[in-house]
Length: 264
Image (cartoon, rainbow, N blue to C red; front, side, top):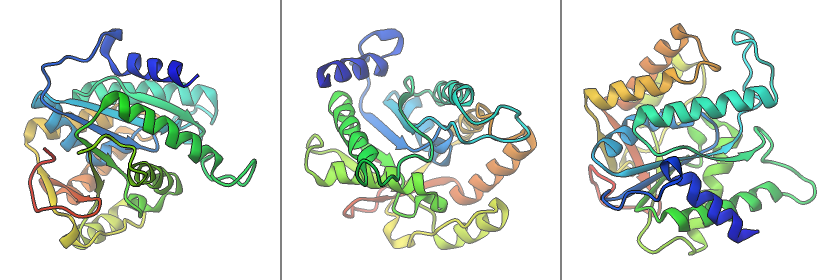
């Protein structure tokens, strides 16, 4: 079964079922909880994809519970299928490889039966196997605050960190958490309607600057997620993102790292 899972992931990671091109310089992997979470760091993903690197987005849950009255599709299988398509659309707009969807139930990661953490144990094995197939140079995920505190965000980031601290990740792979310094988090909080948790600016030692092309790709990627927001809401959300980014996407390196403007 594990071998079949690895083969399935290898096929999913390659466009049109072919092996990834050997000419790309590096591999960057972003692991998030929901379809649309990648939009929080999207200019950085677009920047690295445009430079000729392989960029993958792994989405842990199916987003089936993210229903909005405006969109009119109830929570369930139909919405999960729509959100999977939106995730693939976003990856295309960012220049990333086809999205890898792990398919865990939205808001179903924290359970007490059959034992606490059972879905998280399954997730850790899938993420571990996938990272061994992709062999990334760097991985991005949610930090312990989950951006704005969402429990799925926090749990997915915890599982990715668990895989790293187990020592099973290929040697040399670096792990990063997206973060926002306190002044930007405070400003975004008022507009976003959620509590955006800050990260000490001294810890945000990796700052990825982006240009107009990366910004445009990020805006197109956000537009893919039409089940979540109207055009007007997307414009407002992107304005909040730009407040958070301020021309650069900031990251904290797991276990610390030098001040730098690049992942690799």
